[in-house]
Amino acid sequence: MIPGNDPLRRLSASSSVNETAQRLLLAGRALEARSFLEQALQARPEDPSLWLQLAAAMRRLGRAEEEMAALEKVLALDPQNMAALLQKASLQELLGQPRAASVTFRSVLQMIPPGHESPPALRPVLQHARDVIAANDRGLETFLEERLGAVRHRYGTAEMRRFDRCLASLLRKRTIFQQRPSFMHFPGLPSIEFYDREDFPWLDALEAASNDIRAELIDLLADGDSMLQPYVQIAAGLPLNQWRELNQSRRWSVYFLWRDGVAFPEHLARFPRTVAALEQWPRADVPGCSPTAVFSILDGKTRIPPHHGLNNTRLIVHLPLIVPEGCWFRVGAERREWRAGEAFVFDDTIEHEAWNGSVSPRAVLILDIWSPFLSDAERELVRVATSGLGEWYETPSVLGL
Image (cartoon, one colour):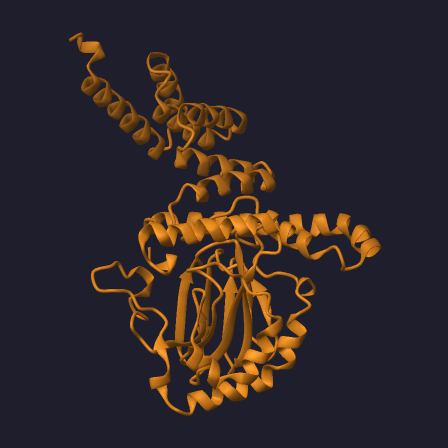
């Protein structure tokens, strides 16, 4: 092997050069460090560490243009060099370019894996980066709203809801969540967290019956917990994941009227007024999957962890019945409080979670309906395909596959 091409010799030489340059910089001899590094780079122009040291020397010398050139050279050789990106953002701040600095700082933060704990020495730097980004986003929001004001005034609030969500995502005030069904994904259906109430006029009649439905549920609850069953029932030997605390627990319990397309006649008999109120319910009808109508009871101080629903061909309806203080529900980036008697429709294939912060149970009637964006032909195809899966695996419910 040719000694000059020995990787270990090159690494040793590079380390020695960097150590020498570092000692010169620490001693305040930036001019000497610059000269030394420029000579070293003639021999090793593809060494990003030498360019980074040269950028540090240029900072000491107040040579901003040359510092930026050295940093760009580092990033051309190593685009994810965090030290170079942080120094570049710092230089952009010194040059009075806070917007450019925020873009560079954002690149740094995007490199850090979720949940990663940064070294203590780096935390103040990263917090400063977050502060710069936040200040830039506030300024950008003000800048855009000044230009949007005339359009908002011209159109009123009617056309604003979806755009406001778009703008919030653009300004990074709203996380973008995607559909992640655990069973079936139907391409081309919109990813909407909470649907507009106006799209489901039949909810008016359901809400009008909420007092009757609540009264029948209270009668059932008066018979005790034995009437309910745990919602989460994962068999032994299967991974529990986020359901460890709630598995086989009555802290989140349910009472089914219909489940996976199968009615419970004895249960329906106990809820005649509820059944009457559900006559206009445009239920999804998929063998082994839908319809489902269930009372969901969540104990106080209990959280349903973030999770995703089964398939995006259906939507979920909540009719809140018993809602103590401190209860909320999140779908994607949007969080709401339940209000007794006020129904809403959402896509449960988008990450969602619930919390009962009170000391009393919370009760909701949950229904499933077809996505309004499916044609009759598509619904029939989904029925046949889902039913076929059940036949293939010889199980009445595809949810057990």
